[in-house]
Length: 339
Image (cartoon, rainbow, N blue to C red; front, side, top):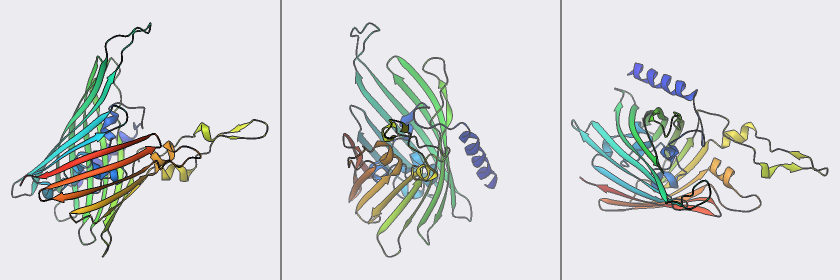
């Protein structure tokens, strides 16, 4: 097992040398929030280790026997006419010690009006992408460590152009039950295009995510702290709207400091009454809040909130995520216990 961990680490480090962030890789839908629970906690949370099978799509090391015969269906009314959703299911065999997991993520970009190079109207067109994943996790014997992996098959169609790809997610998770403490590291979307849209092979949106969470002692609150895009430190950029102009009309660009970059990797979330039939969730995504906020206007960008209600073998979830004063999304989820 130690050799497997070393191999995982080598793969993550090697892939990080080719890492890119938003706008420089294809299949960006792979890094969208996968469930109302994850989105309500700020997005990209990877520290849940319980009944929720959707967590296995983002962090395969979290696949565990509690997910047995759990089915999750989720739908997000995203920005504009875009909508996307996920589905996940887990099944245990071999005396409930071995769990296999499957998940699907799709996105529909809606309909677009087509025009030729002279500006004449042509046929309308659409676009969509889908990823099908299969995952498995194992406990390292006599330890609190779990390792897991997903393999994903990706298909994309944008107007008349099609593409396919394959990717791996590799993860390690430490679960210390005495403190109800979870610590994890995930390398996501390690892979390549099999067939490009035309001739150029594009990079996949590789990302390293670190996370830690814990339930407070004698207080029904679980906190989640996530570090996203750790494969690349410099994720902040200078906003030209924040340039300082002196009396002579000379401009000084916004300075991006070490602290600016540090905060833009952070996501913080809390879950109230995490073990009960009704819970509340609140999150803040620092990078989203900083990059999408409107100057001199309170827009609450970066904030997200949600709740879930358990009704016998059903659990209903909802999340509301704020981007800025002009954009927000609603995420709906249903978890079904099929046992």
